[in-house]
Image (cartoon, rainbow, N blue to C red; front, side, top):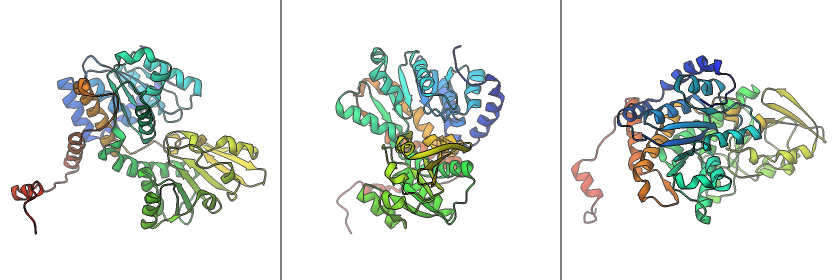
Length: 418
């Protein structure tokens, strides 16, 4: 079997780590048991480009249990847990192409290795597989039934492709499922981003000015958690509605040019490029700590920073010191890549349970309904979303009410008034 991992001997460590993650993934466990019996993905080749974590291992096992032939590569050069990659190869015969810290050339070679299987279905986190297929591997398009997309950044790219009329097969936007973004993005990103920042720096958050760029679901979660640790949270936004929401949530809102002068910690979560630029770096106070938790490192203008830098050095693992010409020092975490996976372990498995349940069930939905789907981006069907929520509540031991017949009739009629 072809694969490319750091060290296959790490598989034993991976086995224990995956076992620990399983304990908080009851929904995906139930789906895997059903998939093993029904084989809804039998005969399908599935190429996946995801963060190679313990939770992803559970998803890969579920897809394979459902009958799919699976290959996996990393969706970010710094997000791989090398012991997980080794575990999937050794214990499940799943070809994995992922090494933490791989260079750009290796990263794209690994993507190409996944595509060499000629997949019937893609599973992306950032749309790199789909982008590669549409640009350099168009020969594969005829054989592809469709794909799924995990994250906000990827959905943005794919919707742009669909709008331009260049998307050649249907995609299900897993990110837009309520059981994904309301929990994974908000609670997962909020906790894991702070985890990464604290692991990298060991700095106290309480009493600091914590600047968060953007106020989408991921940013909401980070703001909530930073505030909970005692930070004075500042939000920067371009959308007046989101900015107003941030104000009503109790945070200060201002342009990044103003926030740059007062921040102790900075974190971008927008999905856009050059959010913190050269002119902002030079206004930061000595010792400012800058990170990104968006999918790609383009949110930080690192080339602009280098242009005003006198010297650099690695101060700690994942902490690079930039000494500016002014003598002030700015610290960039994890090469500007998503800090929750660069310096920490990503989202807790309990929220990834729902996200990856959406991935597995969306793959099943694609396989069953591909003939009726057009070349566009689709939302996860609501019945899938609600079923995942129901299963998660049941696993947590939480019960809820049901409508009485009279209540149901009332909600579906127009005749009854006050």
